[in-house]
Length: 241
Ligand SMILES: C[S@@+](CC[C@H](N)C(=O)[O-])C[C@H]1O[C@@H](n2cnc3c(N)ncnc32)[C@H](O)[C@@H]1O
Image (cartoon, rainbow, N blue to C red; front, top):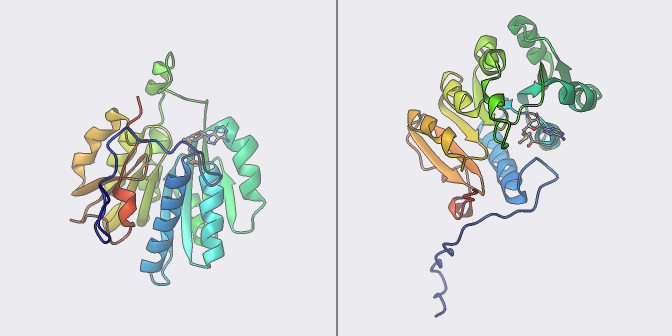
């Protein structure tokens, strides 16, 4: 049976995963594009005031979305945190340090970082830990690594933020930590949201919703997020094993 024009057909119910990886971030094309559209919308809502973003788990996304905001010519501040020292030192920091608007450091002194954030659009901080992948079979012990300094740094820096993006280590703790960083108008984003052990932190937020393949978005305000994301963002999400 065909669906009458103007009436939206239900999406199929089968397990969903859009698979193809984006060049913008370590995620699906759909998720990376929705993330970009959300940043665009939130920058617009800031109406000329800087969009202030904390990103736990740096990488391709740090490079892409900060360049995107530069291209839009909107003011922004981006604080990226990366646990993996070797990856940070050998790959990310050299690329960021080539840019006039960015700086990568391995010092987590809050006063020094506040000063850097006053004069740089992007500040990335590396934490010198080894590669930690507790989600891989046989690597469960990685879950016990001490990353307290990585988790607590944005709070120690003590600035206000508009968006917190969680795509690195200690994600459940970062979802809780983000409560201390965002006001009622702020948004927290969590990637790989299908992982059940992150989800107990969601109930601390007034509003929360899955979107895209693997995103979850939360807010301290009472909202359904339809003012910042398109309708199709809320259809079909990945439920990976
Ligand atoms: C799921 S990735 C996400 C990183 C980032 N948000 C992105 O989308 O590009 C999480 C972690 O993978 C590691 N990582 C990211 N890009 C990498 C690369 N090109 N090579 C090795 N490790 C990488 C970093 O330690 C990072 O914190």
